[in-house]
Amino acid sequence: MDGAPAYGHIVVGVDGSPTSRDALRWAAREAELRHCPLDVVYGWQVKGEPRPPGEWGGVAPPVEAYQKQAQARIQAVVDEVLPNGANCELTVHAIHKPAGRALLSFCGTADLLVVGTKEHGRLAGWLVGSTSDEALKNAACTVVVVRPQVEAATSAASGADAPGSQAAAEGSA
Image (cartoon, rainbow, N blue to C red; front, side, top):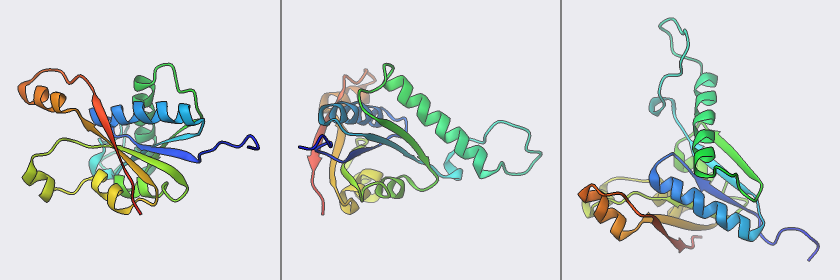
């Protein structure tokens, strides 16, 4: 080898949810093992973001204020989940797009996309679209879906703490 990394980069979707935090941990470990960069991506939209603090005098805050807030919030999640940083090049991106589109915009050059998914009942899984479903259907790279463990989902339903998560790799065209 000529010293170049054997792999491109890994992209992980993070929104602050427990499974996205697990996905971040998994992706950071994988990037360290592969000696490749990690892109942490948070797709956001104004309608889903809290109003940024400041004197806006009854008018909508500028998109830049939302962008700054989204970037700071996702950076705080990364700092909390990886308090000692990562042993790889790590870049945090807050992208003003729906989550699925934000992730897919990074997949063209990525070797791996990592997403977390929430546990849904059978009917909800059929009726509700999700970012992980969009990634599995449309990503141009291999997709790893980090799911809550069966014990964690059962414990969460009964009100107990979730012990962790598991990952399942899926390839896509």
